Length: 294
Image (cartoon, rainbow, N blue to C red; front, side, top):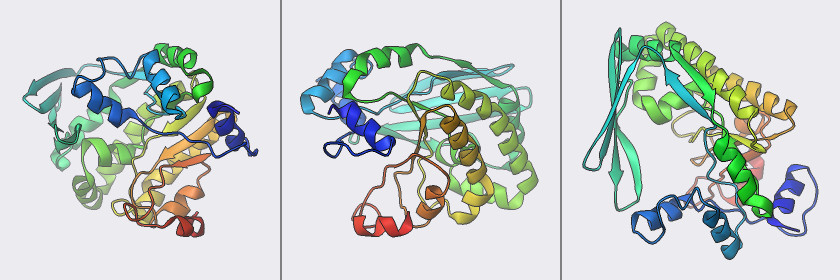
């Protein structure tokens, strides 16, 4: 069997000839590009898939977002200062700014300033999503389908749930928790407006050429416990796993953090695949414990 046949057999509930071996080589590849060992554009090229083939690794990541966000009546300014990347969005009701800092030693970046800092930023964030729309961007998915062949499968992303989008990208868990506790009405209004916008993008993703679709929550249960999950996340996940299944495709969630606090809940949502289940000692569960939670 090929790498592709093995993973599809498991997704269909069948028995492959051996355990599929699929790896996410994206961070390694990015480090090679930064060091000048691989050329710019390597990850998007057919050579990237040949690299997987040479290493005998099945391909499924990285995927991409098959849509573009268009913010109407907003002015977006982006610039760099050294290792820091800034973006400022100005609206008729005010402006917000974020900053991400690149860390050369880890070939990665992280946020040091979020758009949503306090409750004073809620009107601006609400305005941005009230005036956001999404358009399809399928060109790369079609190209990837041609490139991948029997080496694996093509994956695209839906948006995160609005709550996790704020936690992971635009606010951080401390601001989210404080605003949710002190201004629950305004916070829920923002999430509702975000969901209306994200539903557009999610529909585009489901209709894309991708064979499998991921909600890339980047979830870790020491940050988001059962209460937040049930209140703000389950409904979005259940709605879109159902729609993905109805489209004849397979659904993934990206967890990639501590598992014990939410694995039972996520296993009950309806995803085809829970990814990635990082084991002890990096994660908080040993392999033999995972089945008890799932």
